[in-house]
Length: 293
Image (cartoon, rainbow, N blue to C red; front, top):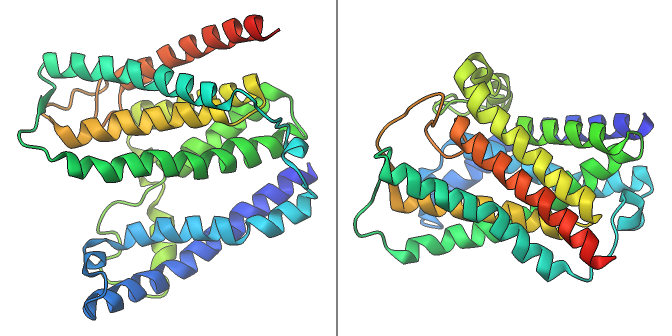
């Protein structure tokens, strides 16, 4: 329980830091843009800086948190060296991306999406970079650190469920756009107070939060099944790349809740695709376990 208390304290410190630092980041970006340095920063709303400030807080307090846990090696968090890491990355990528691609083809054929004409492939490059970097940051944080800490006091499946809940809440919490029209020193706390607004919409909770929760469970299952992060990194990369690229090259024509919402994370169809990946993952882990023994 002491580790759980330390984890909660880490979250509290991260959130407080993010709320206080967000206005400073916003004002610094506006100053740079006003002086002709990175003028594109002026296009970002305050909410973007609020989320970046939270990530910065998570990094700032990471080392003290690890020191308080007396974590000196990945093995202390239940992680082992994976000699087949490249295989796991590739398999994870295929297990998550192929079902999404098949779903996307189906959505285009059914008229729920249409292809955008003349999309430049140069615009796809930042999505590829993001699909590589984000899992390399989030998987060590959520499946490596958070799940590892929970495993020190809980059995694997309760720990995985709680870790998936943390993952889904962090990604689902988002204040509506234009929440902070005039940025003041307390604007971060205003954004924080409105971050739970989406929970007032049952369809978003059913389609969006539930899908994120299922994704967190699948990623945690991959980590538990291999005692490594590489399979979950591959899964995470495939989900991001397949969905983000599709969002760039295709246009949503119809919102058909509860089946499909404003993106491929909202709706019962994305949830079903995630569950299909979970079935494929379980089959792969069983096959790999039999082959490797």
